[in-house]
Length: 154
Image (cartoon, rainbow, N blue to C red; front, side, top):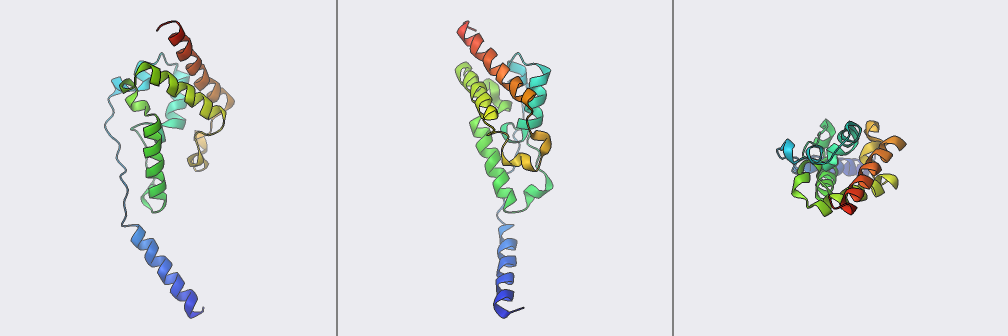
């Protein structure tokens, strides 16, 4: 092995090792069950199962952090994705959203799953998160129901 290749390998190993020292926040805030979407939406058990299986890790306070999320740069990507997901909609904090925002979140969820935007790249490592046509219809049915309830003044 050439001297330059050996130096490059040493530098890469050192950079990788140093990257492990930069630890992102990986906290799961406490969840008050009475504030969750399951407690506030006339939710079918089918919708609850879809949200728990496919959406929980990025859109709730109940993220499961697999072992590989402790290794940089995967740890950074996962922490960023969870932060971004929770900021978009957090199903554990559903009660904090005004009714119009709840309806908009369900409609946006329907649009995103219908367009294949969700559950995103993370699902490549977690095939159980892939959404079937029935799963997508379940999410969209909840969105349609929320819109109908809003139209009827509920």
